[in-house]
Length: 160
Image (tube, rainbow, N blue to C red; front, side, top):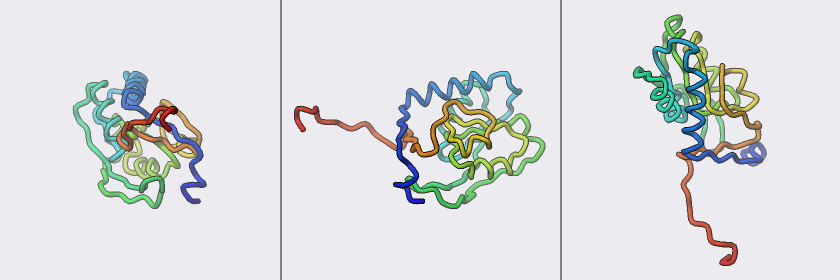
């Protein structure tokens, strides 16, 4: 399925919205477990992981690096950096910006099967692979994150 067939809507996230949503996620996670470590899924999960780490006062932060997107095209997942832990990961928190089809989430779950997995945003196909999320959007929505966009001047209607 081509990009033009897959995405019919765009949901634009501002830096302020992202921070507020990450703080809401942190409030939900506070007290759920005695978190020892946060694992951010690079690259999209790095900013949310940093915000959640700050809000939960977690100093031990690591990453797994899984790549599956090129612009608006999702391809095969490539593991660029893995973590192997097993049972010791029960009080670890996996954070990502978004779960879309669940491809990345499934890989992360295999690496850290006992960890708690939370994302800020979720789509229906991937939602089953995470324990918690803040905002759910339809599968045909492209989420435009603030690190992928920039504000630009727009002419007033009278000047067009």
